[in-house]
Length: 93
Image (tube, rainbow, N blue to C red; front, side):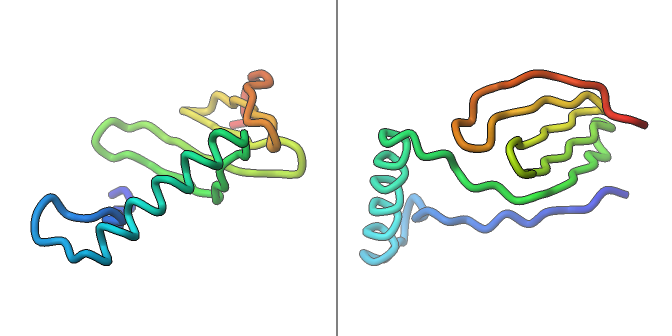
C-alpha cells in the first residue's frame, strides 16, 4: 500500500472564505508572480512517492548543484539555481 499524502488547501475556498483568507491568497499569488519574474527558482524538498494506483515511482532529491527527479528509475537532472534541464541518467537499481 502506498503512502497517502494529505494535501493542505492553501488557497481560499470558492465560497465562505473570510476576507483575511482572500487577502492572504492574493498576496501569495502576487509574491509568486514576482519571484517568477525575478527568475528565482522555487524551493523543493526531498520526497519519494510510490503511486499504488499506477505503479509509478517518483523521487525528488535536491543536492549541491542539481535537483534530481527520478521517474520509474530514470533520472532527470535540473540546475539547482536556474532550474534548467541539464541531462538524464539511469539510476542504479
